[in-house]
Image 1 (cartoon, rainbow, N blue to C red):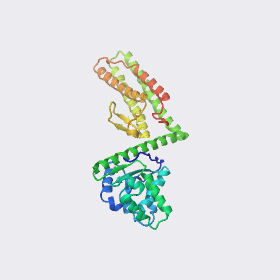
Image 2 (image 1 turned 120 degrees about the horizontal axis):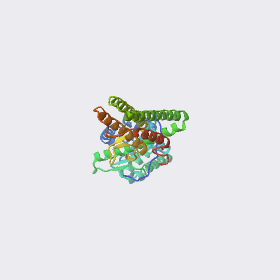
Image 3 (image 1 turned 90 degrees about the horizontal axis):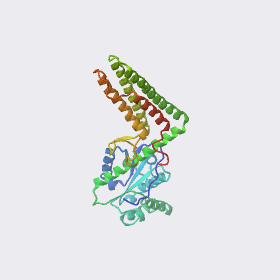
Image 4 (image 1 turned 30 degrees about the horizontal axis):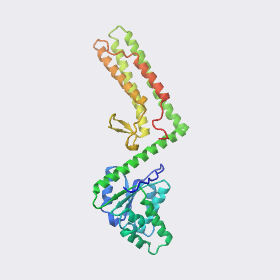
Length: 353
């Protein structure tokens, strides 16, 4: 890779393309870009290249709009890149968007040394000098500064001896990781905006609290049902109450899963089979942050455990035997636990992280 100066993160907005590629067509149009496009397609990344746009003396307004609406720009620097004023003007627009915090720029030095690009020397420098003929000192200076700037950004260096397929995979992984981090930041900012909007926040909180209290009521009814069943001496009535207990346990689990699923949707987390616990993880930082508080996770398994206990007791009761597990106290414990967790829960990730 090139030097490690980091790029600015784009502000949340509606983006037409994930990646925009800037390149000199005759150098890489039918090889590098086509393979890169295949790699991005397999990674579900939308890519735009300017090969189909008519080139003139000035950069096309449509191309400028595409650059501004993209998330990442991949600048493929080749030996003849600077021989095109179109490419150099496009680079100016790319760096302008980066300076405004609306674009991440990733250079790829394809068969050219970063030093030659930075100093405009060697074959790269010859093409640059040819392009600058008839241009003003100001125009040449702007192009030179842009080339110098792009060399200071984090990117990839490829030589003819390197494995090209490995380079495509690295670029694909890097771009995918950046897009996932941006998606996470946008999702978190939307969540923060909802918190600042009293109407949205109140409605969501009210819905969540109503759902929680519905689970509490079901668990309290389950407590009463379980207690009544324990006091009954008639073997004909015990299976009836045991079935009611099982149905309420199932309903309690369903409501808990609905609440948990809604949180998963809002935070846009993904399930990953990672050791030691396969679970839902935030997409940022290579899925290193586990979703949900420990209290939420424990309660989810407790409600599932309650269902298992009710099912076991029903199977024993229907055969005329007492269940091996006394459940009369557990529904009340779960109900109290849900209420406590709801009013003491903290956001999984704070703004300072």
